[in-house]
Length: 566
Image (cartoon, helix red, strand yellow):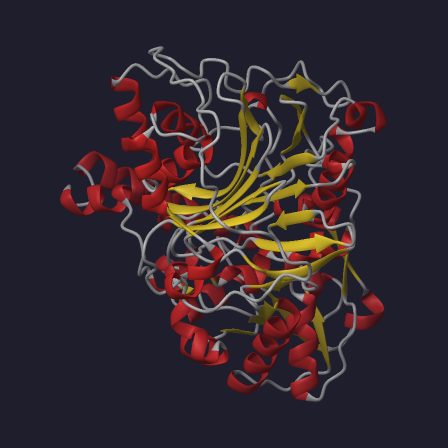
């Protein structure tokens, strides 16, 4: 017990000493909690000595009968949506008898962060229950499913895979009954492979291909007590991006990595229930008042006694993902303490200042380009009009007729408004260009609708590096800006002009906080070393066969794009 107490003391801090360990003082909660560290540790959890202590992991979920539970593979192929994929979204609720219902509603608000799968886990009377399934939140849950999730503590997750294939068994939250714990994770662990290899060498058997499972194995391997101390010790071994919520039999735990890559906020409902979520838009929907961010490197443990605050490590300067403000987050959200709406308006204004052009109308590629386009139009003094309309009723797979339709996928999703475009000089604003294939099709769609000129404006710098911190981007070889200049890309997509926001102006827009953001996708300066990249450097980008293969893929991509333009 003395060793366990020492371990707890090493990682804990009371509310009274928080200001000395945090980068800035914590704002007081609306309703004060008792935050002192308990004098006596609770009854210790049993130490597991099995070689495979959490073999039950994610084998306890109930497959949703609404989703197709028979199909292990999720159909996610969609070559017509050339965007970085949203990571995931998480939510946690403590102290509300309808915790599962509020998790469900919050996940609806976070649906834009992941559409492959959804799940909720709750705790009641020391028993953890979970329901997970593939598809959208509305596909997975109905009244009968929520009725299977009683309790006043709950966590939820919407998923787009960043590590691990798209299998039903990879859908979170993960629940390990033997530990009495569940977890939902947004981010990506760059040291996942080395951690997993070490655990497997020690006898651990993994049930999924998700990097999140390694966290539960680390918790199982720890001999510390109580359980939340084991969570803290496990997180101290992680490298990369993680905003996580943990569910135990009587606690809700929220953790954010020391660099704060991914967002996580805390709010409170009028009945005193505590809510954690990836974005403030989830708090808004369930009428929870935003209180503050979970700070980088912070661990918050919530139980009936109140909130206890812990610090993982001395914090370096945060490196939050700037792309949350470019594309991922909802415009209505406040992310990293900044309004997403204001950021996107400012990016549009920067575009109009840096790259003006004579035009008759400004339009957007919906939905993510709309706010920046409004900012561009306001600064340029030109009317913004809806020249492209997006269909929100298109599924993730398509059945194409035997007679080929040019740009079939884009036409399913986007409709050009001829009355807005015909005979006009058009500025079209999008948030980013990844491979360039969608931009090519959009330019052609606008010309087919009668646009006299098409000027493409991108509300972010050129993407030249892949993300390893929780965003599913294309490989570096597939990123068109990593191998072509702006003029070459303009010629490839067929626009009359093309311009991006400069990285310098983006950083200026962030003001005094500019050094607190990660720009790795724009400058390849990675805040946390990525083993995969280091291996390439050591091996000289791989052997000759691999290099030749990459060169062939580039040539093939260019050939495909040339054929598309014909």
